[in-house]
Amino acid sequence: MLVFPVLHFVYAGFVASIIPPWIPRHLFWTYFTAITIMAAGVSIVFKKHAQLAATLLGIEIFLFCALIHFFLLFHKPGDPWAGSAMFGDLPSRLINAPKDLGLSAACFIFAGTQSDTFGKSGKAFILTLGRLIFAFCIAAFGVLHFVYPVFAPGIPPMLERISFPIPGHLFWVYLTGAALLACAACIAINKYVREAAMVLGVMIVLFDLLTWGPDFIAHPGDLTGNWLKDLGIAGGAFILADGG
Image (cartoon, rainbow, N blue to C red; front, side, top):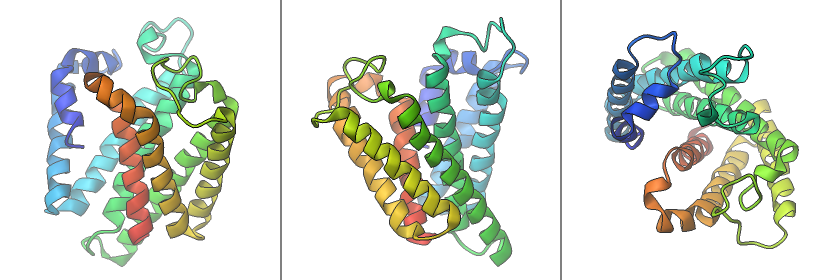
């Protein structure tokens, strides 16, 4: 959350182009969200009003999903903004939507594991909300592994330079898809949550090290949003494992 705002300022024009045309003042919202995300990140790092900051950040990211991803997935034919090539094809959109929603859930999970500012009932509600949204996103990733296995690293149309170094590529695609579904089920029904969340967090971190790690060394300037989103979701899993 401390890196995303930097990207907002460095790539302000690109970020502004993501905002739907019916929302005015694109650059204003680009910089405004950068400042609010940075403030929330600092608050979380130093644990100053961290619960409130994480809750507001979760709401902000959730609104981003509702105002942008929803219209990217369900738009009228011929819509020039929603049909833009910069958003990728349908599989890319289906992958990105639960990633951002998963970040929102991670914020709610963090808020729910903090102090008793909201009281026990409020704390339980926000943790449950985050846990259920998180489970939904992880389940979506699992389903997408089976529906779009060709989008796995090293298989076109994934970026050619992103490879997977372990043999038996499709086996690992389907195995991780099944593992994601199993973890999502445990988190959703609130059974073996700590174990499932820990397995999930470790799995995502290992995935990043094996795939994005080599690319980061070779092309550090190209490794931005997706890698950060993966780490954010892994962070949410570890928080859930520790305090869920």
